[in-house]
Length: 241
Image 1 (tube, rainbow, N blue to C red):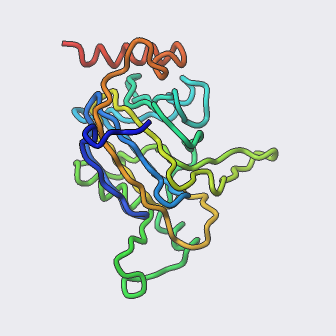
Image 2: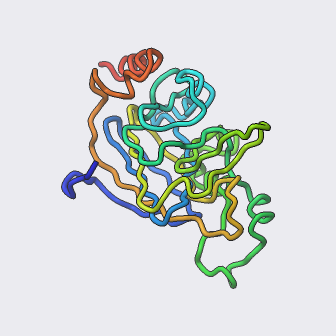
């Protein structure tokens, strides 16, 4: 889906290894574009008005009978409301179960560096990046919950192990999320914790915002399953006035 320049509200590039947070209004959408290939976006969602309500991974997966997210899926809050919807996806698989990297993992996988050798490039874990952004909104470590990892695919092997799929996302891959609530979005572009790369070189991600409108009665995400229909009803009642 091409966006006309006049449709775009704003654009911003989040360099690999950096972090970002912002508010997305109900009826707006955010496109994530993998700029170099192999990107990862570790992301959390909170109700803008009441941040105690936030993304709930277990309810999201069991309600839709899936272990990963793609077009047609939604992200549920812990109040049974639809926070956002995957309205377009050229990747096909986004990890929901593997969590985020921390400083110890980054050091073990990529070594220890300092500003004098790494200059201005970010060399930070997803956990540290998310905590920095959460602090800007009065939140902290206790508010870290299971997250979504856009662009990353992790599947199970025949022996039950988790297998990271290198190259799952190509340069130019996009994911479009429509926000069905007023949502605080918090994200990091640090590597996935199971990334097999041996050097710290995460891809940049372009964010593009536009007005998408609310979910229609024939919306693909609304009608993907009966539980999603109920979730949208719960969300619409929350905003009814």
